[in-house]
Image 1 (tube, rainbow, N blue to C red):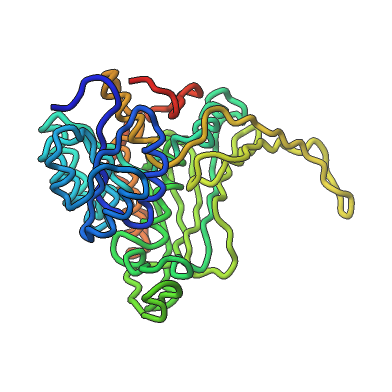
Image 2 (image 1 turned 180 degrees about the vertical axis):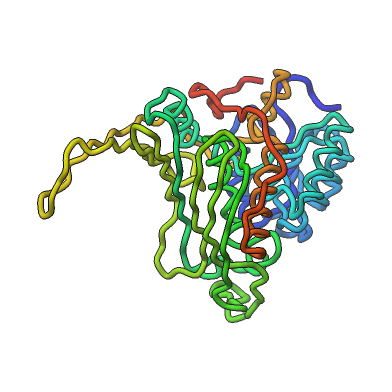
Length: 379
């Protein structure tokens, strides 16, 4: 039977590239005990378990059959997220799932309905938005430091993950691409700031119909591109404000992690939403006209980042502590489903070349306090 106090038992399903980031952090959080690692390739699970001192490795049953495991961390490929999440819920486990929560709205709804039926919780990545970078920015905006938020600009562009990933085909399949792979970081950040999305518009293109693996044992192999590899996006928010975003894996120029939020009294620049923290600044309006070649002098205020920087697994930790305390967690399955709905609406807009209304909505989006310390023993 699951414990009601003390560290929570966690099992990880999926021992691929990103498992290192989760295991590095979850094995260091005092409120978490990683008890098992599972993968379709048993040797991979065994290697990761040995590397991080996890006592058990094996197939999915090694995780789902252990009564001491309360939480499943689902870091399988996107197309497998829903099946693994539903199976884990049926086994009586709370679920933390990597993004996206599914590849269709119907799948996300099934997960939410199953969790509600069984009295279990679902959390959804990205949890980067719970790091001190975005959370400090939220507090800055709530204080009114940039006045009323008006609009945001975000940029993610580069030549693509095939230059480093040993098996990148899934990143160009349905459920992947720059929008579904990287979009969750940027859209989640914008929803934390502006609230739920009301409508979107987008244009998309496909740079090339195939890509070639450049690293690892599959180097030289070609694979198909099934999704738009470049999208320009407009977003409108229910409570006011708008954003424009670029997502591209067709650009030789590397520009990523750009999130700028402009309000009536300044522009807030916040850290890369694929990280947990970094520099935060506010650029104030010009006080007089500068005529070239006279240099522009403009006030830029450095904002102190508040909180402890950790890494992936932070959202699961918040969920575990919240369950024990009987309060809502921040990165909910509902939040993940709204982000997915927004991303799918962007895809549909690019296909139809028209505005698309986002059908789902959210209540107030929670926050983590500056005193949230992942390295403290609290359970």
